[in-house]
Length: 508
Image (cartoon, rainbow, N blue to C red; front, side, top):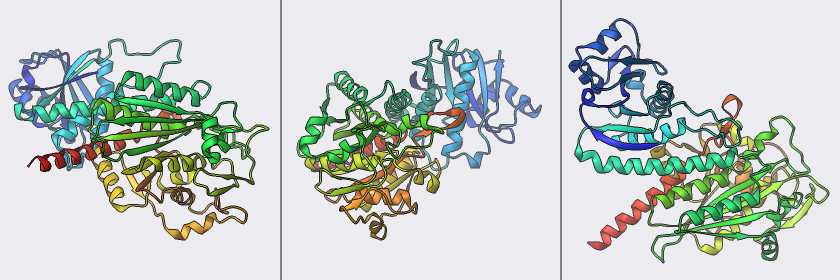
């Protein structure tokens, strides 16, 4: 999709489709009022007649409007003016995109920037337009023999702004939105791939392909013999039941000052999770292909970072394994020594994410990172606690927590902090090793998992994002969401802004 910003009166737009907003109770947005005044009150007459109430999900397509030079006018319902928030605005954009694709218009001029969204400015609205319109047009039909693309798909969107003074900020919003949308698409594509094709070696190939595509990115793949020699026995304990060898994938982006410590993103990449010997129930086990969505989000965030040319040093670490039962699989009761030297009694082989992440976190120490964020579809308990709307957030450093919460607010990719208190740690006590990988009961499962990881993150500032409830949708809309790519990218954008401010202060 091509996005541009353009100023000008709505009635003068030579476009295949002009998009205008209508609030509930049949009230026109400012752009729609201006259009209506020039075109003889045609819109207000239709609304008085009851053709459109302005409720969310409603729309009305008009042809041959007097005094207008556009081919069509699409009126879209925006709901009650005082109730338009982030969620409602995205719903309006999604409905608009779907309807535009049904009209056959290949380009449109969208006048929805004047919709009042609580606490949001023009730049935010434009970026959300780009991200949401791209998301609404997403299709994963790579493996279908017959593609179901729209007959005449939407190809170009002109977004309205009021004047030239808004041009620069608006174009930057488009660049950011497009980069985030591309990162989200990559993460969704990887997540939606079937596990017979998307295995650890496939993820390693994708990392190498990304490094070939972007010269500022370097890829390095650690194989099992090297990991074994290093002492990553917790990670290797997960992969030993599979015919697919584990990979530790490292992606380095170094465009910050040489002295700048890197920001490290660690992704859980379990390409299929059967549970191992602690076998999962068969129902919905196909969705365990999504257990690598943390890894997919690292790919997506790094791609966005590279496309935006952020002046940062960033490392992506992806622990890629397949968790399968076999004669060689790890057994409940086995004890392994992690890369940190701490020993772990594996009481449940289905609590495997924390085993691969603990070695990846220890590996991250050698970079002396500015901050480490791990992203993992870690626990069903997080879904029980929070549902499927926010990511669960755990942290050992309050300023880092606040930075992620600020990024979540800006990106509308929400988080909710959960406790990481020492009170929970004793639940991991083991009679035979330094710790067990699960507690003796089901209480606070998401917190216990985070407490386990915290034992391997004592030497750096760290956030753990549990995305079990947010990485994919089930049911009719089943598929990867691409979250938390917007959150991670916004966090990096905020760090880049800090660098720019520091440079400006140094220059003065």
